[in-house]
Image (cartoon, rainbow, N blue to C red; front, side, top):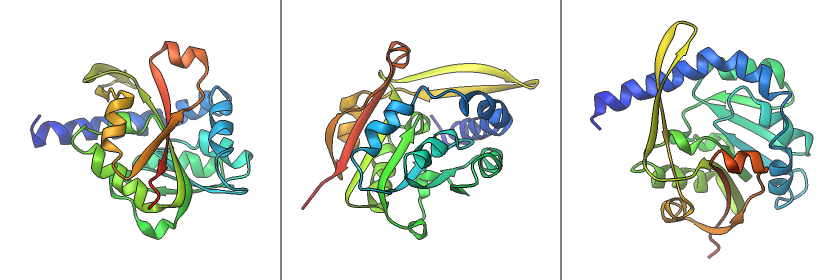
Length: 211
């Protein structure tokens, strides 16, 4: 894949999330299918943890993390998603940011929650992204990531409000993630409801390597 193709794909991904931000919020603020997943994650963290919601979309899971006592900062490269998140979830902080270039000014976190985030990252970039995540976690920090299981990519075309957009999702196995997560050690699978598992989703928990 050449640079031009990558840029076009990134632009389509951003347009997709900009155009669907309101619709996504309408559905997912009411749909608590990840509530037990979040509770499973937060149980690993200290009381009132500071959590980074990586690729937060319109803030629906940030809201649920906050409801379980977390101080949450959500980042997303979709300006429209961040606008909606700030309106719907004022108890959390949201910033427009490409999470491939995390700003350490955000502070240090007890946990990073990455739901359907790494599916937009090319395999060649994933180790560097993981390193950036490790850099903003404290020495006891945990990462939970939710990905589509498999190898290679899934590609489709979606029509959104009259615009035809290319939709590319990168598939990752546990082994792929463990190899890329050089600064982490694998802890265990995270909780997911059966309907998400049947749809190919997997949740994995990592911890920053100690020593």
